[in-house]
Length: 252
Image (cartoon, rainbow, N blue to C red; front, top):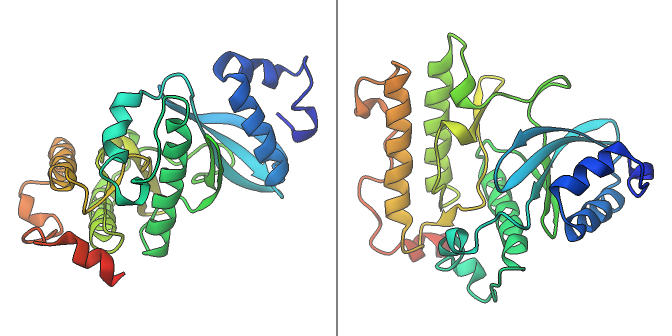
């Protein structure tokens, strides 16, 4: 789908998009293509219930464009990750607007992580339910998810993932809240943490529970991969949860 052909009714790429996205999303995509000078939206590299990620080209460079589906992002399922997040406490949530807040939340989380030195796709921009970010992979295929990685050095990526998550928690002061082998990419000997729309600050009422769940998910996967025999081999997170997490935020 090229920028100059995006509005053509007979464009096959447009027909494909019509089947997947509604008119508001198509308008948002068109605006993004103009605003960020996107030359080409190529092919989907990841397809899920709530979003689709495409490889795209801007000034001869590959980027990723994540498009959140307006119709399938469940209001009740994502609301708990927004309510309780001090950064969005003034947002008036509705079924029609929550997808825009979700996209902006992921952009803000990625920016926070990138500024803290956490390996993640570098955010480029966001408009409505369309997020632009760094593309991880080659021109032929995207970087594999940790669950699909079958190299002999999988232990390198598992330990990298846990170290990156430790940095995310202790430097970005964010809890992923859905960490697993599905949202970690293996790229150039480093694990990259992705899909952080639901990620919450450590002051969130459910932060500690989310952290424990994330760590347990990684322990289970590491054991299945035959990498982890002892949980003590994992990087140490907070020895005890801070009495007042808000103090850590104020120090930033």
